[in-house]
Length: 124
Ligand SMILES: [Zn+2]
Image (cartoon, rainbow, N blue to C red; front, side):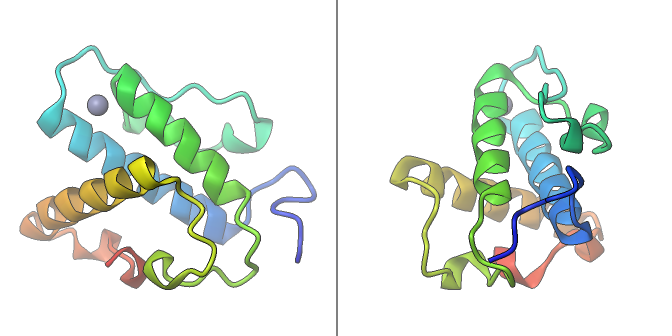
């Protein structure tokens, strides 16, 4: 079990996962929630290089995204499996539903716009 980011930096995999979480949440938010929206505020210096300004979210989605980030960074599995196959089930029930809903909606949205390159097998 390696520490998530011992040098205070994200691994390439973590960066990719967090970016896709932020992107998907902001796509979902834009379609479902009223403004105002703002980029997620992060305290962890390791998260600052993420282009979060590109993915503004409302207050409700910011709370969710902050939670999702924390869960992802604390994932105890070295080779993270597809979440649906994961034995840990790190999201608590309400949040797990929301993750599924967001991934389903934003995944479809991006496929419709030809952004299939943004999708990773483990979201579905
Ligand atoms: Zn929202």
